[in-house]
Image 1 (tube, rainbow, N blue to C red):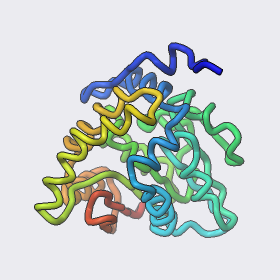
Image 2 (cartoon, rainbow, N blue to C red):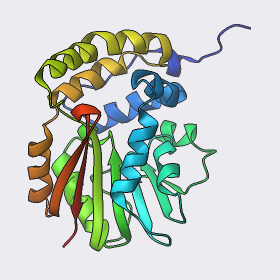
Image 3 (cartoon, one colour):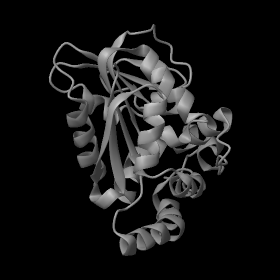
Length: 239
């Protein structure tokens, strides 16, 4: 049987580092069909462990409600919902939400900079590998604060700066050379991964992101490195 992919899946589309919301949403619509398998391949299977670590950092208790921003296909939301937590998937890519339609968690379309939730309505907010794709990350961090109840938690799981300098050089080469090449074999829109590699390289390191969380109003901000700093978990509390 021939390949029946339609042009929406085969025409390459990438966003620019200006991160215009319409361009970013359209780009993710086009990677949605094979997004989960692509992530697993590109991370060497480490993505599942990163999701568990994010849930543990959030520390949500049974009966609490948390918002998973830039949730994509809701794989991360299902992880957050373990143990009696109500986890809501939020993404501005309708293609992503449709790709995860079978996952048994509530879903809502929404922009990280203007969340469709009332103030102080959730106990925690998580964003995994999505903050660097927001046009104004600082506005998003303030919006997360708005919807979180006092004492609630934010967790940002994001690619960061490896702590060992020789490894940082190897990692940078992987991002710009190997990652797009691998994406061409597994992704439904490999051009998008050129942008994703560039956005990772342009993203602030761990102390800089911690400072931005503090400037947005979050207290007790700290971070934990995963996989040698390839990924960092930043955590903050709403005063």
